[in-house]
Image 1 (cartoon, rainbow, N blue to C red):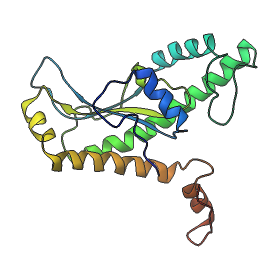
Image 2 (image 1 turned 30 degrees about the vertical axis):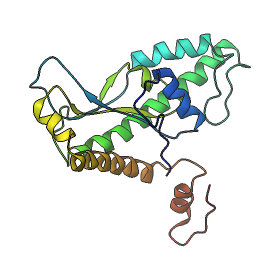
Image 3 (image 1 turned 60 degrees about the vertical axis):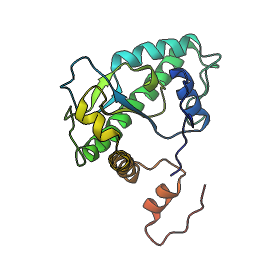
Length: 202
């Protein structure tokens, strides 16, 4: 696996640009990592989100409206040469599959986070976050903690705790790809051929 950061410093990138960079990198999974803040200082813990159906519907409408300028879907599927009905079906199928994969990946990350600290929500949550709206890349948003909570903030200030969170997220992602290896990857070839198989590195 290869990790690609959308930025390498403390500067702002628009939410849409973050997903565009993921698409340019041909990402198989998009993970947005945050530390949240809320008015209630008693709220603490981690949570994981994927795109809601409502958010998916609004994004599909935007893609169809801009399909002449939109990037191709993964797998080389183009929308700009399809009639509206077919483009809508292809986009809906892609989005449905993406959300389903997102839920599986997010669940493995949430369970991994539960092993290293408090989890605020025991199940994966769904919301219309803009940063999760790429219709064909499984995506999740990880809220690692609440900086508005004194104890959470104290832990986040510790490099050792941040390392635990990072390792937990990685462990969940690794578990997801072990069971859902993208076609054409070394992991997928190894799973099909067994431990003695010869594979070509991408």
